[in-house]
Amino acid sequence: MVELASLGRKSALFIMAAEPEYGPHLRARFTPLITGIGPVEAALHTGVALARLEAAGRLPDLVVCLGSAGSRRCALGSVHQIGSVSWRDIDASPLGIAPGVVPYLDEPVDLPLECPLDLPVATLSSGGDVVSGAAWDRVSADMVDMETYAVARAARTFGVPLVGLRGVSDGPGELGGAHDWHKLLGYLDGELAKAVDLLAAHYG
Image (cartoon, rainbow, N blue to C red):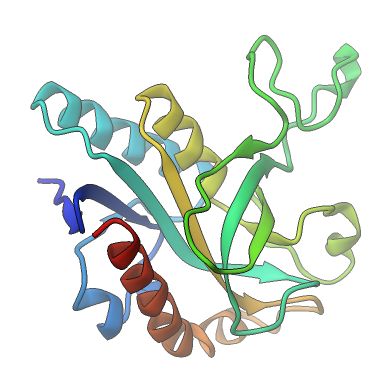
């Protein structure tokens, strides 16, 4: 059963990719839909959840997608709201279509998201790869993750606004394994919880 949370006057569906990002501070505030890692899992589970909520007459007022991200521009441990998100590994250029554009889909390269908070705003690039080392040279966005674009497409399909909140866990150098991703997740749990409290106050 998908659980909705109250954010002041708004009902919200919180979405996260993986349990390691969901620490005690966030656990005290909401129960998220955990989609699994990557754009396919995020699109599948978000779409199914929203379809079930719609069928039950319980579509939320807001979707909040949050968790960790990599960056070569934003400071480690900093939390940002996402102004727009793109899909970095969609490339139909052999068909004469610009990279980042989904063929036959009337959507912009950069999907705009809600930015209701007094927090730094960053652009985000989602894709199916973990960006590390020289791969940063292919990224023009401020931050990278693997799920937000997929969640944004699902939310737009159901007409539900999306807020993206991401804390920087790694980048811009080479990742030395899962440990490099995990080491800041406890700190980001507390910082993201503060951002969730700001959301609740904003909609209160």
